[in-house]
Image (cartoon, rainbow, N blue to C red; front, top):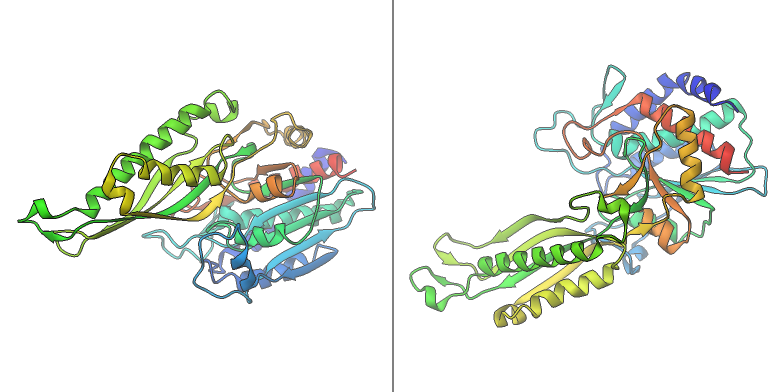
Length: 411
């Protein structure tokens, strides 16, 4: 199958790609509301796949050790979708993963769930992260049909819920039992291949103080000031483990801070002239492959307890919600090289880098031992913003790339 023929066939699907992505964007599928969009995607995948099923996510997922960010909703009406394109037999199997849940609309985002098309670009919440990626999977299956692409190995797609809050949909799929020779997790990364992905832990930290009137400072302990002390301790810890990682992973070394500490929320106090008795702050700390999530969680606790502040040793708590390990395969792994060849065949550079965000790739790479690469069109730079958008051409190019990969790899 010539790559020129692939590109021409993909171009012929422009209108269908645009329509599909617009329909997906028009479903407001924030966490807890994914059911209707999953029903819709099941129907669309049924047009192009040999086998499509719902994989129910039940309340039992809350007992899984990798369950992230406790959701205050019941499960049962928000299934994952699993779709299979069967091969002729005996070849390498490819697994694809992406998600249809989206983050809430940004402040000032006008009509976030009403898709708008301008100059070949679809605008709206979730257009690139990651509904354009789900549309890319549909386009891949459609291209295989239209061009009669022969592949010996099966192609399996996992389209999941709850990626944005820790990957609980992919946890359910990791327990399903699929195996494969390669996995591609589709996320917006401008066609850069990402075989190494940092991990992350999200946390909620609480400090306690001794409340009192501002006129009696000697008898009070401000929980807010203690929280600021803990933030300083976490900052020092981040700086230390980042320095310790240098030289171990060249793809990460190119970034000034590939594993940032972010403090996103801080709550404290009941009155301006009163030392607060309690302060709560929430954030995320990235982690690189030289540490596991368990190590980082224990070391963060120990950093506070062993800081030399006796008050904090007795008046500090921390809870971890979203917990991902980093995942790594070599930049010259055959899966990376074959994807790179397929990208270059359609005129893309085929650059290889590391991902300084976290996603569901670690579940497939680390737990299922499937070599995993993150790849996709669209830009992470506009995801989660009121500028979120997806060029239709990116979906077509990504589908053509994956079709080329199938013809080269699934043999």
